[in-house]
Image (cartoon, rainbow, N blue to C red):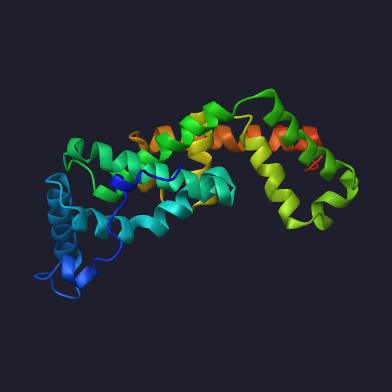
Amino acid sequence: MVPPSHLRPVPSTPPTAALETTPPASPPAGRERMVEQLVQRAQAGEMSAWSRLYQDNFERIYRHIRALTGDASTSEELVQETFVQALLRISSFDGRSAFSTWLHGVAINVVRNNWRAQKSTARAHARLEIVEAVQARGSDQVEGGVHRQQRVKALYAALETLPDHLRVAFVLRDLEGLAPEEAADRLGISPGNLAVRATRARQRIRKQLVDWGVLTGDPEAKP
């Protein structure tokens, strides 16, 4: 979704103009303070500060959403929606977590809403066609010969069969490779709870891929 023109960040404000008093290279503590000041200014309605937050976080949010969805065009739309929603809700940011963590949480909610909206028979059939194309090449060829793109599509087809909480845990840990503490922080759960969700997701994905013939072996075996 392309944000309304009145919600788009100001593209022409250079970082140095937005942060005239900020040193060019900041240590971690200085960086945190800089972000805090930008957030406060954005909460006060200063669009140049929001523009800087947008520029600093765009690439990370895009990669995050791309890993969650597996689709480039969908990711571009959801990134824009994420920043629109974040701008509308920025007054509610209270600083109890890092701004980047809060922003990733907004992205996860936007993606979850998209998943729920896309749960239809037509979409399910489209994903099964991908799996059938993989199967058509013969399960004996799958382990070593199927094109990587087909395997990725089959993985995302399997991901769509999972409940949202298991799907997100798997993506954060196994696709994005986040540390347990960081992934748990983004979801607002304990690292132990995250580990349980990620393990269940891996087991269910493996079983689904074995059932479809994309992988060979015991569907109950741990990945």
